[in-house]
Length: 454
Image 1: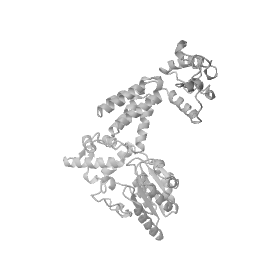
Image 2 (image 1 turned 180 degrees about the vertical axis):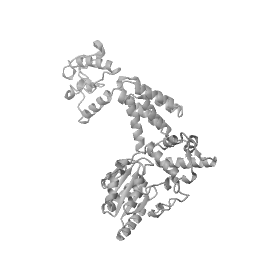
Image 3 (image 1 turned 135 degrees about the horizontal axis):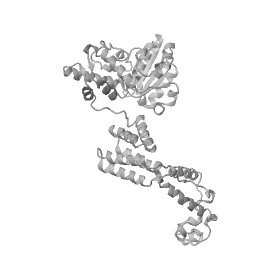
Image 4 (image 1 turned 120 degrees about the vertical axis):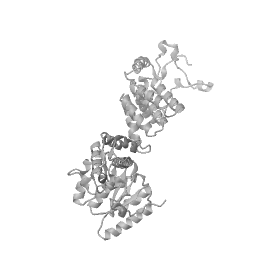
């Protein structure tokens, strides 16, 4: 497969009315003031308007979901700043393509023209490619505009990131999408105006719903809906036509990208906040987007121990059972035990006391390996017994309540308490018991005192 040419400025400025071009491409705005949405970047006095007004375009990373206008903004900013626009696709271009674009930029600079180099999907530009880009950004030979759907702090090298402004683009609102659709239906030159199409009741709602803030998806769905109307011999686009055109909405969820972590984070936090309804919604978002159900089940097992803990000791058992059931049954029926587990975990009393205790103990364990007190050591050989191993150990079952005045931590940590049970759920009973046990142990003499070893 041939790579895209480094100099793609000509193709991007073809006549927009070319019938072979998709509606979303034909409707691409040519001026900053025609861009819909992103008011936080484009409004009066906002950063992008200021750059254009000052003819001082800076390198930037445009970070946002698909269809929010990243490519459009790059093209319009270059055009209104009087710069040459060149585009590289990170998936298909390599260092050789970058070198060709840089050489072209040097020639343009000699002719008095600045160059905007737009790298689409810059999160797929590997480190060597990013390193090769850096000196040309530093020298000012090119103004870099990168577009990414992934968090640039994870995907873009720090030196390049420090020389570019990160601008966050937001999904378009339903009002933005409705404006965009209305514009496409009315535009006789670039849009569908010549067809004199109308939207039936409910069609606009379906278009905005299926778009989910993605302008490209909205226009692609509208274009296909218009074809369905034409095939039916009507000028009215119905809600049913929109649903048929959209088929099944592609849920915004990238299993390898940031949105994956956003959704699983929302899922965990909803269970932690005891909101089963929200937790079920995020769970179904993942399932409908094709997530591995065992990934969800594994997160539930972790959650049961971390966030429910001993407030409901059955939670871990439920989570393990859900994991086994999902593994045994598979999808689609596996979603049923997942839902049962999610509602149980979300509805259970919460305690992270066990996890906090673990972290405290970890800190002390990392400070050094303190010796095990002699009375706690096993003595399987005569030599060990002769050295005092196990001497003085008190067997708790020989004492009332199986509690005995005996020390179990090293002397240096004698008074340490790691686990502090909450007063929620079953853990309140554990709290009461441990208060009694600690009171008895507090009477122990150093090294556990005397008594019969076992």
